[in-house]
Length: 437
Image (cartoon, one colour):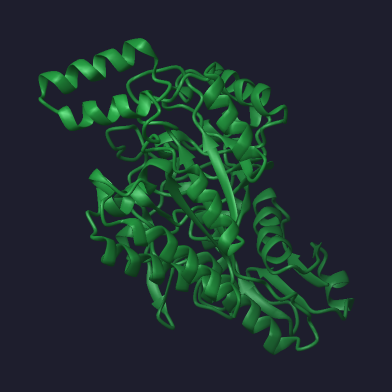
């Protein structure tokens, strides 16, 4: 048990201390706002206020956790023991406030402020504090938490912290289960005519070989994914897009019996989640419609989600998920850059800054995505593997969870994804070897 003194127990204070100590470090905490009662207690203790009370471990506070609402602020990032930090203080165990800084990162405070959006209306990675100050590829919040833990262990050697284990989650986004199959007469006819006009006879030939059963569909890589998951004993979650057809949502029709059979088959082996459509943010009723479609197919409540195109609009998307009874979201990451969008590789509960309250929606950050490496960064497979290995090491150093995003079509190692056959399995093998250490 760790006891904590603070001069004001605000929702923000309660939230971030619970996240750091209970959720990540795994110890019980109790808050005090009465100095006399705090001084009388002989348990390991810290204070979070303007000045120390006794001989406890003292953390001087920044005003952020005692405010309400959102205020634009100029943040100065500096180095402490080669670690990036901000919200400087003068009379404390550290020259910065790790609790306020952690709250700023995991609440995504900066995304509530006016910012430049990309062509899809998303918060751009290059606009983030982490990118601008070169710590996007560091789990900075988890590094700060380890600093806190080290100081507590020095001060209170009897304080027990449960050992954390490095974990891995392989997540697969299914934007389109098939390249040629189950596209319907209209879409197939238009695509075939386009092949003829463009003299793409090879593609036309493959299309009809698949449609007449002479070849398997190129995007049907599901058995390969499941076999890899079984081989390395990894947790894999699939997110299926069940939208109506539109410019950015080109899924197979949810009414297709073959598509439904595929979803049921995958559900027998792995966790299933919804991949809400691009349009579901602007047309909120679509999310519930798409969730209901998936629920009817697998006869289970849908509790997991990742937004198509990583179209994460904070806080609107999260509020939409909460209203649709989603409990876990996996959209926290950037499409254009790998790394730690919220500064952590650990899951945490969404804090609604508009309402100043912790919700029961758990956010699971992802670290790297296949299309980020190939399409946004234009990396060669060899360089992509090196980038992935470095990110895995960062997560392993803090014993966090490394979550990757891959697509079923990117595991078809021809055309655009030629020569990428080694990247996915090398990543999984590397992670598995580290897990066994």
